[in-house]
Image (cartoon, rainbow, N blue to C red):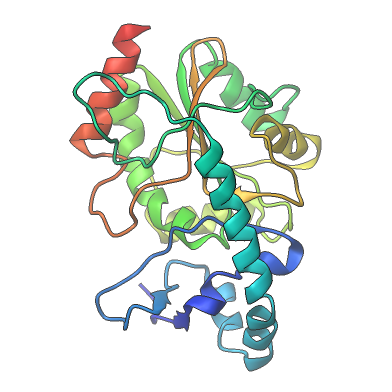
Length: 257
């Protein structure tokens, strides 16, 4: 791992917000900090270098109030969402709070290329579709464990698909391949949505280029039927995607189908 870069909450919250985007309120933290800083070492080198530029930090801090408003709206939207009823005996799932999808959430249609092929191949079974970008610290943080989880899910009849949905065009096929190699992400294809495919994927999650919260995850039942949505679990937890409780939850919903 490269040199650790610590920034205040004000800066960490505004990564990507200058273009109208924001990452969800899940950040990599550490006991080494004072509680008001976050470790952005999981970000690509280029973005870590930007956080050493005083002008860049100043521009991010200026966006802080706008970011707080955006997160407040996001939390308000989440509080109004109906929670998924968990299987009997389960009070929570490490993946995070599970919600029933809004009516506008649907299976992505008319997606071509590698992403479309992956979706088509998985549609007849259970699918977890993950939206991420390299500027989203919690997204990058969880990728290695997601790679570990993919074969475990496959054994249980669930396909895990992670798609880079960065509308800023900061990410590319080459950059995400390099990120996967650098972060030791295995068992996941380095998929990136582009052009109309990106628009289709965002619309399927009820989002758009100007209103995008990451990470976003959609659980689909066989046939591409939306089952649940979640943003993510506790980044301080050692196991989220591979936690025994997560695997048990998936086993139960697949058996009940």
